[in-house]
Length: 178
Image 1 (cartoon, rainbow, N blue to C red):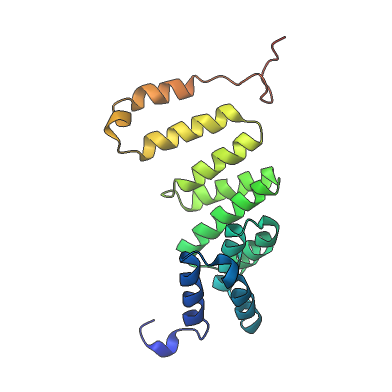
Image 2: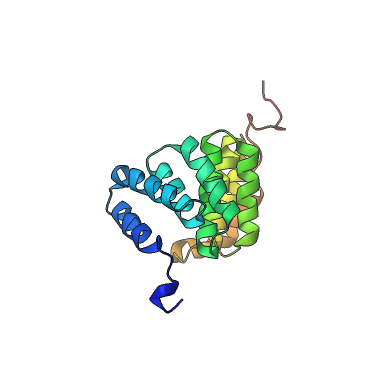
């Protein structure tokens, strides 16, 4: 979109609002975002920014429908990645753990170069009581993404240890110790 006439009418205002959030004004921008949404309903980008702002304000129940609507309306790949990550995290916070895991796994498949999906999935797995699987995934993700020389020197050992982890006593399927 090179000509200015192709820029949607709502875009400059949305950019200004998002810029204010970046400066820590999340509480103040929420009413501006909702007013923009009322004037331009069914714009995926506005719904995504509403969801993100609800998350920043620690209002996951309010964020959920905005994430769902933004994704349904269609987003650019970069925004879709962020929206799916936010949706997965929000579902975890709301206790919808199986759906959270599904959304995050779907994000991993769609965006294989985005390790943040694996890290947020570890949080969901942990919340599900699957600590061993969560730790294994976290360690594997660390090994796959780190450039720290101290860690890269021990990647083989870390991966070997992660593969040999056994379930804790409280995990589903783990043997109970009396």
